[in-house]
Amino acid sequence: MAEGRRSIWTLAAFAGPCIPLAAFGLPLVITVPTYYSETLGVNLALVGYAFLAVRLLDVIFDPLFGTVLDRTRWSFGRFRGWLAISVPILMGAIYMLFFARPGVGFGYLFSCLLVVYGGYSIAVLSHTSWAATLSNNYNERSRVYGWWQTFNVLGMIIILGLPILLSAAHLAKGPADVIHSQGWFILALLPIMAAIAIWRVPEAPSKSASHAHDAKLSDYFSLIQRPTVIRILLADLLTSLGPGIAGILYFFFFTRVKQFDGIESIGLLMVYFISAVFGAFIWTKLAKRFGKAKSLIAGCIF
Image (cartoon, rainbow, N blue to C red):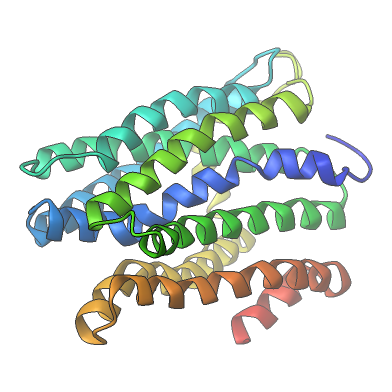
């Protein structure tokens, strides 16, 4: 594991893939369900079932892939290698998902989501695991994840601002133009940012097979029996539940109940994420001064 302080250029290169990944993750839960139900004509209940089924399978896939990731021994780097593998998987699935034509049904949406969430899990798990190896210093890890979070929010702001720019330039004639432009943006940026991270950010060599402990599925069950791990997972669940529900229901609520149009709803959401950019730096500073646990408690109360 690396020692010392990473340069801002290294951290920027490492956090670069967060922009297209976050830019993809936001429409996936906010605009894609609305687009498939209202523009492509897929029954709203079937859209919900497709997302629910794939996310339940994702709960099984993530620990399985985590086991594979722990067992990977590549001279190129296990995290960089898996991030590289995820890029073509995601690009193919994103194209199919964002550029679907009217007439598609539940099977098409489910298949696209199955592949896209698989590729997304590979990318995010390998990237965040890589982040943990960039430093063994308590405060430096806060700095690493501060950059990671900032670039995530930046990706969300950019993808939200894209429809506003298209509308101002009179280039978007409807929801299809908006989601297609978002798709092209993600497809263009993902391979570039991933390549920069893989090229510019070093990865510590994997331990040899004789010195490494290969994680097993049984290790996960042993891990979640620890009281401290249970508390961390419960805290993560509770802190993610509210934003997750709000994200899925946001456009349905603001457009159908509050009667805002799409651009107005996006503008309000951008205020939320712009605030998060400043918040990432503030909470990183607080975590260094007061510790991560106390800062998390303060953030939840705030």
